[in-house]
Image (cartoon, rainbow, N blue to C red; front, side):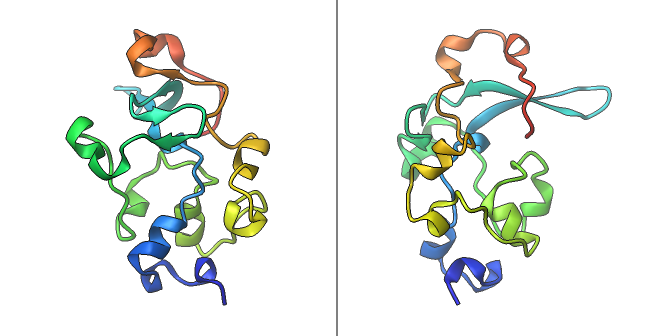
Length: 141
């Protein structure tokens, strides 16, 4: 059985990290409606996100530069309702299979981009964005 089909609790650190599909969507800012609690996705990316590769430019030290960067833990996944519905962590946490475009299935890191599931081509850096309210997008979380 491939490691990505195992329950999350059985994965070692390397396997956990390898489960990420590299979409970069968790690195996008979300706005929360104060009255309803509803989350609204934006096209504004963290300053550390390489918008061409959808990868963090300093993953190891990201918390040094972005103090509120969320570290995903297998026992906290249910608290992170903003994770994309296509997120491998979310899917495997719900005992669902990975999508065909996931690189572990396709064998190609570019397949997430080709499937239109990544941040490539439609985001702006938070450094250049201005007010987040002007960047709400009609895309699922």
